Image (tube, rainbow, N blue to C red; front, side):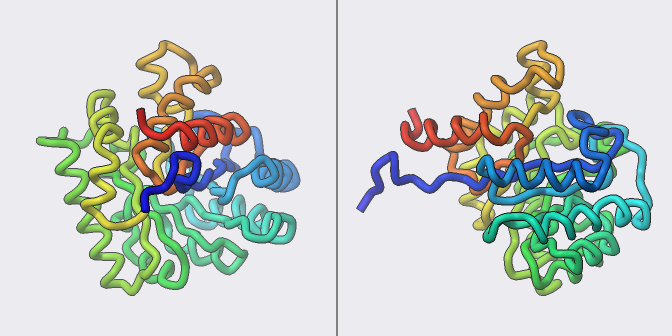
Length: 271
């Protein structure tokens, strides 16, 4: 029996918690452990189902942080969150380094969110065998991704490359595999829009849950002319589209606002 619109499954809201000085949107806001933990608890209270902790910026051209420094940033925050978050709220670690992922899991993380899809440090696939792994799409590194060759057909190419990443994760023993199309990671405006327009078809082709991050991203600024701090309405439009496309999780900064968007978009159903 078909579900009524109001009964459609709602995507999980993944709250972004950057403990970095140079993230594109909120760098430096949560640099202290107590402030970061309080921010994560506030997002969970507002409706986030995961808190995604990152200790290295992955914005275009970002500088690399070594694993030791990254661990020093994220582990105290993850431990604090594990002690204070309401039951059922998951903690994910946003890293492509296996050493950082292992330390984060020991501290209480149950999701590894790797923007490189296991390419930059393949050992991360073995580290993540007992938890959820999100395989992002990116060519090159955050510092070089915008210099990579263009796509012949971005939807087909990204789907094929993600399928290869999923198979590699399966061979490594991962059992709970998600994917992320990598919006903004080495893609221009046209390519980002093409991927967002076909996200439902990509999910069907790949057969795994999908998490998408569009919050405050550059493509929204390109479409609206708004600076990063004023992209909440553009983000809301993209989030509504993704709800209608059937995504499983949305990585966002503005939890209360996007919770409202998800509630209304889910009730209305795809126009």
